[in-house]
Image (cartoon, rainbow, N blue to C red; front, side, top):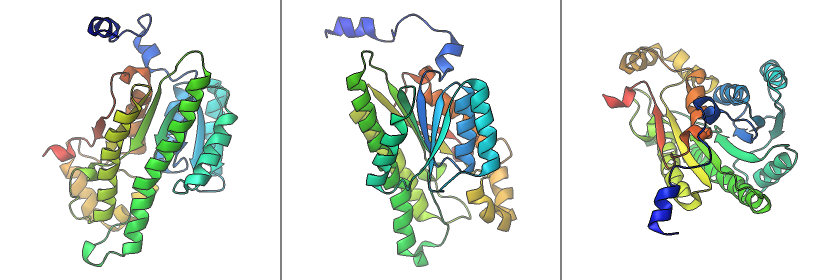
Length: 285
């Protein structure tokens, strides 16, 4: 393609669409890992509301009944489907088998991955157990690569069989801890794993463009089941993080619904290898 042809093609993807159409996730299937956690449940809800079918994946043999039943009702109301599969995302072979089986049953093209699965512990580095550090890196960083690799292979296979080449979008949950040291909460292994996810994303985006966009969301401190114990025991941290936030509060899983839908949708069609820092300005001080 000549430079002139590239210039004329730039930014044109068929007829101009409305903003509503750009943000829609209809006619696609999206896989969400970490589906039973606070973040996973909130993002599944947003994705269903935006019109996509969802495949939830997590380590539990089945999701929490009440929360999942509400999502099933929402899916039915929106004319979407919601399914769940058990999987340890740090096991490559199992992950590939589960993804392939789940996607083979989907009625719509597989066009998105939201990787929320992750773990974390706090503790001073001087005496932090190395086996726990390895587990954090294995789940948070290697697990992200496994999920991305498996999803990308299946999307590439799908693209080879379709007359129309559909693009896909991957969104990984990183952390502001990939940029800064958290005051009062030593977590070197966790921070290193999330910084690794940010850099992994840039590399995958460069390898898989233009057919797959890869981006991260880096949250600030979130009130989720994973952080509940820490924040409950340390009221001083809640006060500190709320004060350092420009919006004066900690974040909730619902604060990430919009950013996730944006990065999954065609509204972000010219964004890849990027990190969307959603921390209420915490890291700007």
